[in-house]
Amino acid sequence: MLQQYFGNCPKNVAKDAKYAVRSGGDEPIVALTYNTGDGERWFMTIEDHSELAQMVNQVKVKACGKPNGSFYINEYDQVIVPAVGSNEYYLAGVYSKRLHFRFEGKAISGAPVDWDGNQLQPGAQWLGPHAGIPYTLTAGGDDVYYQFSPRPDVTRKIKLSKQIGIRDAAAVADQIRSVKGFQGGRFYVNEFHAIFTPLNDNGDLAILLSTTSGR
Image (cartoon, rainbow, N blue to C red; front, side, top):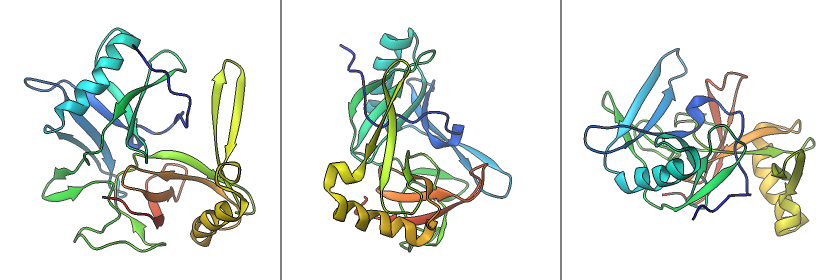
């Protein structure tokens, strides 16, 4: 049975801000588009996550009538699958194995590290892919929120301060504000618990804001 997801559902994001399942040789494979920041786009695939691909496709077939397509993994390891042609999202399950791609000798993943595997610090250039779940830092930089649609023609805003308290939410927001500034705006959190934000409208580059305990 399909389980509809009503949490933070990404909408209107760039193609490189999500994973996808594609047809492979013998079974479906996981794919990712990576923007290098210098005009190139790398189309990467990985074959050793067949369980994840099957999880996504089970939902795709039931919800859309055919397999393959985009999906997301949030910071809670939940696999979120959008239904093409509607505003509905479904939870495919929990997947805790991390996706590590290789392309032209480089290791590409959402881990907050540089090309040599060194931990990035807040304010450093973000070299990882842009797949992530969007949140917004409020103007003034003292709270974080996301919005979703619980039913047609209705949106609901979920503030972090309402979930964990004003003081704790302000501490989280302060880390993000230290790089993003008081103007606020969108940022992303991925399954590695890396927090990053686009530098321009095209999302070609990003800056690491902060990290928690990713893997």
